[in-house]
Image 1 (cartoon, rainbow, N blue to C red):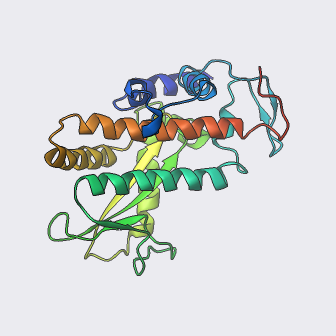
Image 2 (image 1 turned 30 degrees about the horizontal axis):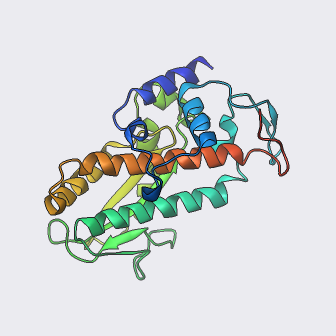
Length: 244
């Protein structure tokens, strides 16, 4: 438990991890949490008691901090896919705001496992090449990442990025590739931070608003935290009482 607390503290102190705390709660922009989501995401950040210990739908015993929901083998399959889809939409809209046309899940571009990347720009972005991207989200407090995350914020995202990048080893050299690796507690790998920072600068050039970087990172953080709340709630069996 000490190492979990250390990892949580390191993550909370890292840049961009708390961007969701600075977002104005504007429902029309998708930036507002309901009361239960606020309770859960704050509790996950602070490591406080969130629920009565119970049995997850997968049969695993869930402790009072409810972390199991973020890694449950039954829940994340469908929820994580939806999460990545919304984050991919967010990236696509950011490119659109920078007047860069894109298409999602491009036909004809395949990685080594036969799956398509999440998106590609339809014009050259750098060095005369279009850019393809892929989004992945990993749980900061997963047992396999704890030792690395205890040393440095964003370590889980770096490991996940390296592992997934291997699937793009044979990707066409005619395209640039960007792996967007995010963590449930809000940290990102270094290349993802650089990518979003550059994209937000391009948006600022179009809009004239120097705050575009803050807005983009806040939208990303809100999306991640909202799904943390959903995953937490999915550890309860249908019909369980959520009023603690």
